Length: 77
Image (cartoon, rainbow, N blue to C red; front, top):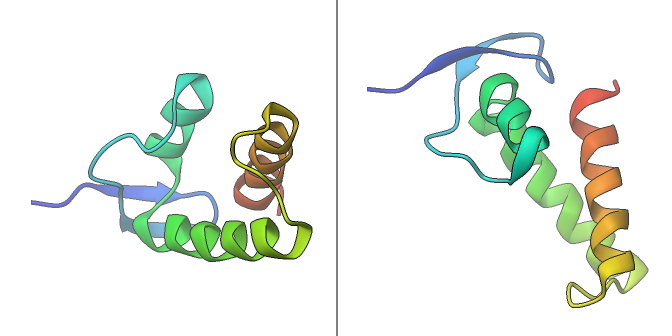
């Protein structure tokens, strides 16, 4: 049975994520406030960012850039 949450990204009730997809407080917020559909939209956006900016997921500075972009994308509309 799926979890129904109020998705702050979509601004409506939607199916929630099945499990936590990120660590820490941000991960808890994503789990509680972001739907599967919104998370899928972020994954597409993240892929574009990584490719266009040639980000390296082994580089801590690049990981921080992606995290900041994720927060802005999901929570600052």
